[in-house]
Length: 360
Ligand SMILES: *Cc1c(COP(=O)(O)O)cnc(C)c1O
Image (cartoon, rainbow, N blue to C red; front, side, top):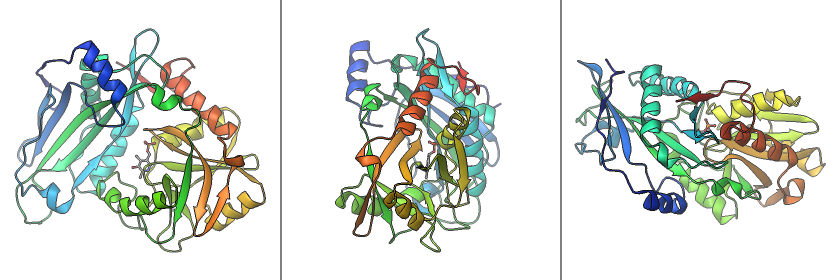
């Protein structure tokens, strides 16, 4: 029974050191006291579910994950409200997306209930790591790797390991109201191609984007806008976040394809925006048209969406030698409003109309 976790509590960091560690954590450098592991084997299926003190993984150097990249991950958060209640944001949606990634990568599907139970256990055990402050959270990183020791690649691995670790996020990480980015359009590299793995959250999708990130940084840009691999024309996403544009009185985002990761924040933004009576369209978006709309003033805002940073306004887009400034280089008001809505629901200040908070 995968739902029955063996529980092994370990030592906990004292309150003062914990507070200091949370304050100093950039992103994902400090971890909470415990972790989850669940094993899968051909003979036993899912078994050995454990909550235990955070420790190193011990793997044989021939473990398949190191050689053939069979690895997927997720990212989601738990929050604490003013009544000190802890909730996880949309965990069932992440569980379903994890299963889709499993399918694409020929990995055994982890039951939705095991995924959510693992998060509940870890959130409950390490809840002291969640500050009660808007924007503060405990970020969970569930992942799964192929662990069979063999260099042979004959079909499915016979062993897998599911793990969850958690890293605290301090409130003021998000308070930087003017945290905006410039985005660089990558004409040279591609992130995903049709028929590939772009819509699965598999680790191989990220290694190839680091070089493009470095080139963007040389151009003074914090993020890359990825176009489709075939025509180099259609806007897809930003590699770890999705993208939105405000054109006239419409909110536009690329329609999902098999080269775009279906962000849960993207879906959240679409629903919040429609609830605020904005006209939201999911459609193919031509980069040349976007640049034209910025020039003629019809494009008034752009922003990215993702779990880690919620909403980040994009204040300029660079393509080749041209740079297009958006909303005078400042954060737009729709991005600000939607970010307030999102953080308000997560912190428990605003009504959770869609039932996104899963109380533990
Ligand atoms: C995780 C991710 C996103 C954002 O998804 P959220 O569920 O909103 O965090 C977007 N693009 C890629 C490639 C991602 O890996």
